Length: 132
Image 1 (cartoon, helix red, strand yellow):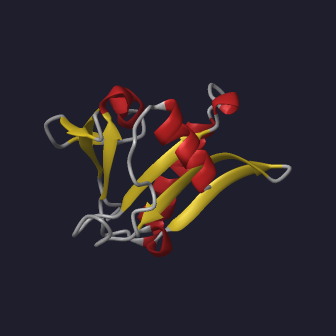
Image 2: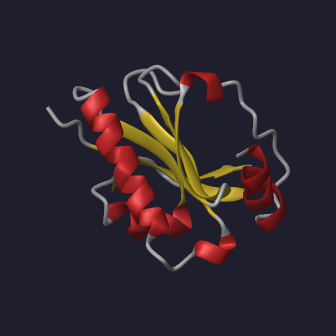
């Protein structure tokens, strides 16, 4: 998991940052694997980690060889469903790369912040409503 996260976030995106942020132990980790190989991954976090009142989905990655196969869409929808069923009164807040705004909007997220730079990459906060 950490190897693929580093391959994408640090090497592919040329972004030097500390990926292990201390929140992995608080999260639920969803992954797609094939023959033991990690193809896609995401981390779902409870309210209070890192956002005070919202749950979160993050560290979403799809191996380069698997892109264009809807794996990312399926994975994120799985995370949305998980968070809304686990914490139904909590909206989901994400810090999304701005280039993925339309993708997240197609899954029910709306922009709720001005663009900001995180590790040299333009991001926006996006919110998905709670299920209740």
